[in-house]
Image (tube, rainbow, N blue to C red; front, side, top):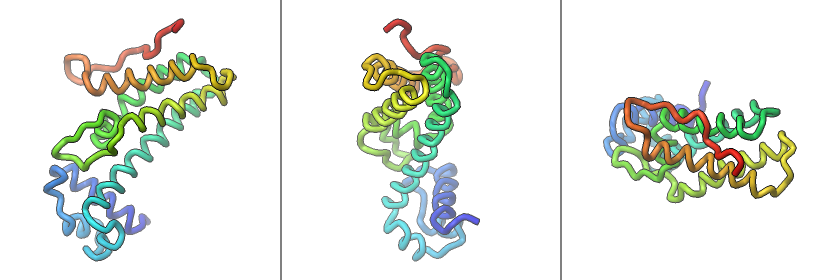
Length: 181
C-alpha cells in the first residue's frame, strides 16, 4: 500500500495528466489521494513543494532507468552501450513530459517548473555512462575519449528531443556516437 506521500504524488500526476499545472488544485490532489488538504500541506508545504517533489520523483525514476539500461549492457562494446542509452533517453523522455522538460530546459506553461539547470542533468547522465563503461568494459579510468563519447551521446539525444526529425514520432537514429572520434 502506498504511503500518503506516494498517493499524493500519484494524484498530482493524474491531475497534471488531465489539466495544465496552473489549473491543478491542491484540494483535488488531496481528494484524489484520499487524504486531507492538511496532510498534503504537511507533506509538501505548498504547491511549489509538491511540484518539486513530483519532478524529482519522475527524474529519479528516469535515472533508475538509465542505470538499469547501463547495467544490462554489462559486457557490450562501448558503441552498443551508448547507442542503447541514446535511444532509451529519447524514448523515456518522449513518454514523460516532466523528464523531457527537465532535459531540454523547457519552461512550459502547463508543467511544473523543471530544475533550473538542464546541463546538470546532462552531466549526471554523462557521468553515469562513463562510470558504467569504466566499471564494466574495462575502459581506462579518466580516458577522455570515453567521457567525450558519453557527452556526445547524451547531447545528441537531448537535441533529438528539442528538434525532432519531421514526421509523426520519428524514431531516433540507430547510431548516436561518432565512430573513431
